[in-house]
Amino acid sequence: MNPPHTQRRPGRPMPGAVAATARLRVLGRTGAVVTTARLAAEARDRHDVDASLLYGQNCADTYGDIFGDPRQWFENHSQYLDQVGWEYLSGNAKWDRPAGPLEVDQIIRQRFAAIPGSAPQMHNLVDRALARLGQARTSGNPALARFGTAPSGARRGCFYLTHVDHQANGPVFHMVNFWYDTQEHVTNGLFHTIREATTVVSTSYGIRRLDRREYATQRQRVEQALAANAEQGLQDLQI
Image (cartoon, rainbow, N blue to C red; front, side, top):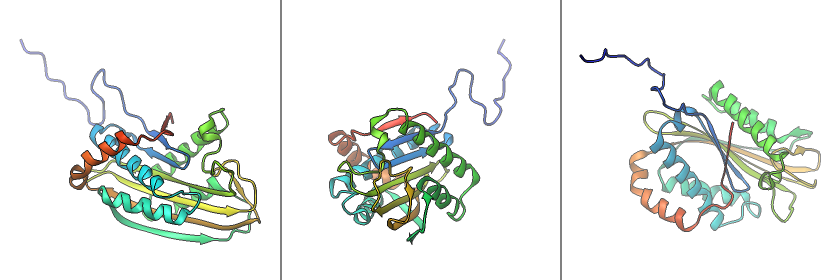
């Protein structure tokens, strides 16, 4: 006798399955990527997002120092994302000369919240990612103690934070780039307090969708480049 058919309720994992959770990945000294649980559950998309974003970081680092010329670095980074299929949807840039004092991580939260069409779920995940980076900074992790600051101790903060979600027609990211110059000593670029001595603050955001068919034509090249030029600062953090 055949066993009775049991219908699985939508949204529930099969028995024995491990539910996917949101992920936070740190790329070197300047990048962080937070992915939703929906994307983490899609193995192919998750892998392609990880590989393509790491590829963009590596290529931009190869052809320029973000702390030496952040504007050019972010332009290069954007071009490499174009090359592997991250289709540009929209974006905006903003320059400020703040009176201070302002907390850098709070500016990042505000910038994400101001992105047109952004959802509360994204804001919540960005908050969790920033809180986790703050915990890692104070936990003795040497790679994150000076996150967003130059090894030479230059008085500049540079980094970007990317939120990536799964959608039926391709993963979509919201990325905020941030850099500032100051006469103050910077120990951690993401958790610095901007005061009167800051000369310029630049923030920009971009929204992109990964064109799966275009990336499929680039996948082998990206994978080969990553195998030959691995990112030494790659870390995954629980959030």
